[in-house]
Image (tube, rainbow, N blue to C red):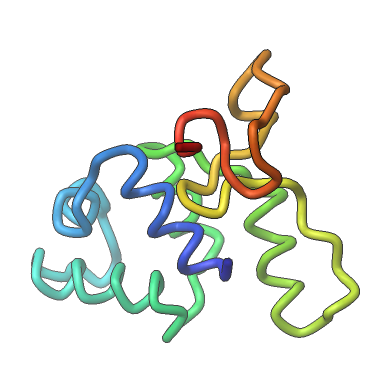
Amino acid sequence: MTPGTYLAARRTAHRFTAEQLAEQLECLPHLGLTDRTGWLLAIEADLMPARETTIVAISEHIRLDIDLLQALDKARSDDGVKVPVHCHRCGVTPRQLRGSTAWPSATLCPSCSP
């Protein structure tokens, strides 16, 4: 999972389309909805990095694990970085599930596990 695919997975887990999330985000300079959606999709495709202010703005609408996001970013250039446990489908971490520590799979959370 990359930083962009993590953001896309969390957006999808929160049942937002890219356009719906882009609609919630303000940006400077002001961009129309089509351009904001394209900008968000470019971040999710790892074609451009997300700035800290963008991450903060996104996290006001979807729950993100900033530690995981930073580890995923570092892991792109350093294979030795330990990436925290997370669901490979929705991106949730055990810490975000609050109290649910038993995962049926090493790569899928209880909600995503078959």
